[in-house]
Image (tube, one colour):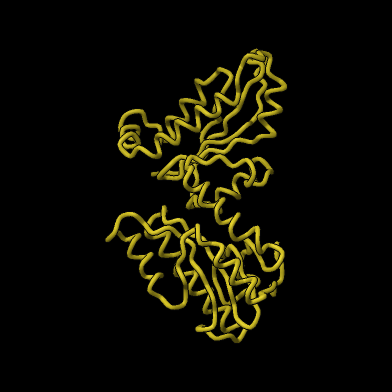
Length: 287
C-alpha cells in the first residue's frame, strides 16, 4: 500500500479561515503514525476563540483511534475494504470537506520507505523540531522500546562514545550506504550497538542486517582490528511468530558470533561493557 501523510491544522477562527499546523498523520504502508507539536498546540490554544474547546482531548482521540486501528488487524482490514482510511483518496476527501476546528491538508504521497529514521527527518523538515520529547507515534510499544534504549544505554554513555552516529559513504568510501548506530566506541577493540525493531518487512530487515555486517567488516579492516575481539550488539525483541521470515532473520543474527543479540531491557549490558573497556570516541563528527 502507498505511503502518504496529511498535515493536521487547527482553525482558531473558522470565519477568518486562519489555521495553525499542529501535527501530522502518516500512513507508512502498514500502520498509522501521528505526531503533534506541543509548541504549535500551545499557540493554537492561545488563539482559540472558543475557550471551551479541549484541544488535548481532540488530539488524544485521534491518537487513540490510530492505536486502535493499528492493534486490531481485522479492523485495519475493514478500513482497507470499506472506509478507505488507509487510502490517499480518503484524505483527499477530508481535505476538501473538513471545515471545522480540525482540518486536514491534501495528502502528500511518499516514494521512499518510511522507517523510523525517515519519519524523524520528515518531522524535522516539516516542523523544524526534534522528534524526541513530544513524539506521539501510533505505536506505544515502539515508543516504549526507544525510551528503554535511551534510558538504559544512550543516557549512560553519550559523553563517552558516539551516540546516534550516522556513517555516510562520502566519509567512509568502503560503504555504499548510510547507516546509523545507536552507539559506537573504541579502545583496543570496537564496541557498538544497533537497535532494530522487527516490525518491518522481511526485505527491509534483511537489508538492515546485511548492512550491519558489512559495516562491522569495513570498520574492522579500516582500524586494523580483529573481528573476534569486537563487541557488537543487536538490540531487538524476538519476533513472536516462530518460523516466519522475520524470526529466521533474527535467528541468523543470534547464532552469528560477530554480533550478540540482546533484549531492549538488557541495553545496560552494552553501557557496562563500554564503561568496563573505557571505550571512547574515535570518529570525526559529521553533520
